Length: 467
Image (cartoon, rainbow, N blue to C red; front, side):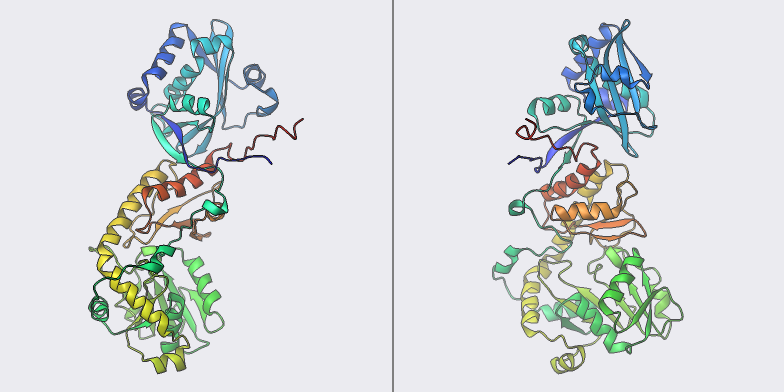
């Protein structure tokens, strides 16, 4: 049986391509190597001749057969003797990758590779490129070598951990330990919620049934419903048609539809909500992702005849939602909504009594987690948070090929991380809930960063089968 490994978070090494930053942050041993090569009279030229690089690469059979147009090859000489070479490859809009590098005996003696790294810094100083990714290795001596040139570390993970140690990270914060919550002082949760919603409300088992009940209470079956969604509209409409398409027909932004549904998806407020509320047609407001908005924002949930909130999206409770706008008794729920579940309602109330008073602390932690994720994903130069999010529901970014949101979604699923995505808008939403610590956030980013490393699919040949 062959051991694969590479399923634990480690740290790669980025070298800043700004000369001032790089020289300030480089370790003294790296600076000594650069000076040693300079004193030996090293010079560097750019080339497209891979036969010269093959003389330096440890295994010519594994060297790239051709240089891609975006790749660059730099060769180092002392006088007329070839002593080292490096091939760099763009991997993100702001990062180059140290793809291949080699030196001969003389090159190692004068530390030609150190100077080749520095030559790349000088070549790309004052450009749009921010980093040279020196690399990462699970071999101690090679990892020590890479870290010598690190001015900005980053977490990286190549392979998913085994099932027995794989975490489960979702947009919702509930976890197994919340099944055994300690008893706390009872608060008047119904009163607290009434004051918050500023309206009568009805407990529901979950968000889908709360939304379905709101639709059944105000819109006849078979009607068409126009949908206005703040972000990721196509995937939201698809979800509605999957859940409720046998009862109603949902069409994006259809002014001729018989009813309206607005959604503050992923914590972004739907700006058309107030305007649509002025129309006499029935309006329902989906506030699943906007339970606690920023204090500077208008609180959503006041525009439609009914609004729907999801407690499990925000708090460590396994289920529970609210249909806001009217109180329905159990008999009505049983006869008309067909989702009466008194046991779940009681369990939801118990969980809210514990967690509702902590909501502001949870919000602060969500905001901290978003800042942490913004710092991590900002290293790629292509995964910055979409701006103007009013409620810290999740971390949302756009991703282009070759790192499509579909590929990121599928990769994270293998690592136990559940995400939501919209392929049309190229958007993906990842967890940032308050039960996530910095280590879990680094784990999520490390899994994505692993797919950016061009060597992440490499598996060393089993020496037993190679015989």
